[in-house]
Length: 291
Image (cartoon, helix red, strand yellow):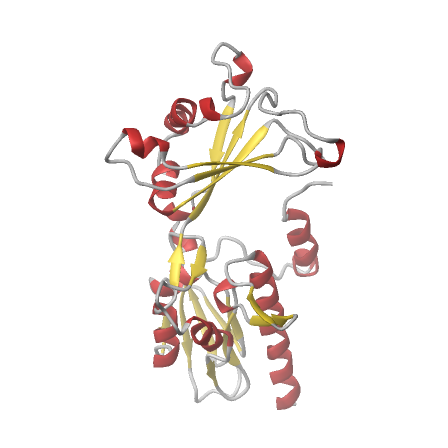
């Protein structure tokens, strides 16, 4: 069965949703800590002027939001934490989805290979024709041979080309794809109506202030402090009488050892999920010690 992450998210959120613990459409503008208060020393202020007091807080906003100071921390975050935030990179990877009436690009394959994704990679065909267009590659993946097949292409596109693509209207995006990329797929026939795009959609992380105008953390070229930076962000940020502020998210992912080799889950859903578990467990450990 093929699906998205939505069933997993709904399952995880169910206990909190059933108790009405999740506040939707509530943006936090500042987090202030009063170190003289033994209880509920952390105050969250919303953009609409509401206040909430807590002992411990786990901050999960994206790295790009931390870099842009979307939330104002009072007092300021420790210098080592600010240094770690601004010395990690934050990049863009957008996804486009293109639907056709049928999967005309499929080619004969052995029975054993009839389930799975098929990939087609194109370099910057549009920028080769238009000098002012950003450079970058498009990676097409066909969803026509998955367990629940669809005549759909997903497309990964990064860097400035990704930003350019998702800033276009859907009609303009459709035009670009049909002129520069779709004709280079297998079995393309300009006279075949099935080769015309029915609809197109896309993510827009690079246009969204609440995603920090990007979608993933990376270690800048030449940096030798990537693991150290993520380690700083995964540790306790500030502590007071009975609680603390923690960060969680893919930008705080731990480096793990598997088979004697180091792996990181940075920039992945797995990394984000595991960091949330880690932060939650550490909050519980803090409460256990204080009691």
